[in-house]
Image (cartoon, rainbow, N blue to C red):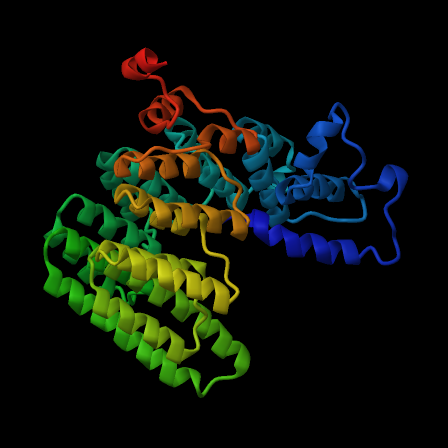
Length: 419
């Protein structure tokens, strides 16, 4: 768990608890940073930097007592902003009575986030040396790390959990199922699933998506469809139940159901199941779910994967205009790249311009894709260097070499003779 986000509300509550106190002078939580130039000051305006400064100030106030979770929040912020070494040094300064499992598991989670195997194992072993409880959270962090880096060590963690009588969580099973699926061990994956059900745990939407994806990769599309059907039925059931709940509960259900529907839509997009994808979007609309940028991204991908690039372009344009929704940068690039691949200069230029209108600054990524459209169309391009210069950019060596292929004013042996 990341405590940095939870610290926001905690800080606000504690700050208000100071009553009429107004920070000024030496009590100001945001005094000018020593040794920081004026050009670097905007960096301190970022939320995490502000939180770091504010939590440091709160800790210095004698009128405020920190709990273990507050110290853990501080560790999380330091690890993310200043690095793991600084976070370790800070832990040494924490009073022993607050130096518990929550603090160390926060450091462990950040080690895993950085894929630092050596340091993660060191922190985990230190937790054991300090006789801190071995929790499912800590074990899950190691499983997550080894899933990325060394799958052979996963068995060791499972043996440790059994020895320490640590009950696997839903997240544990999700990691194991995904690992088995990635290894193409479908039988092993299903055995883990049965064990999980035997423990009385139910599949959530994320785990169902993992299952469906692994079945599809293994070529078992009927089983994948069965899982997706269960997800649809669960969504319908949730829709019926939501009408009997209060407004806050309905909003919470809609938020959860939107994630579930979007996950299903991504699976359909990856497998070019256009009709199913359309049904999902229709269900989302009828259920009152908000169709956000991620949903439209999945829908655009669905149309592109089925070869309907113009339709993908059209629905994104309508959605951004009618729903006042800003599409993701990646969504635009998906369409731009496909137009470029097809050598469709007109539509590539249209998307390029649309991105600028939407607020995305033109950078090498967009220019590179646009240039590819001209190359594939085998038509000359005019004023490309001037457009780059207008955006305060200069062509890289690779971009310049590719530009030479379609530069309308490039010199050739024949043109030199004619000159």
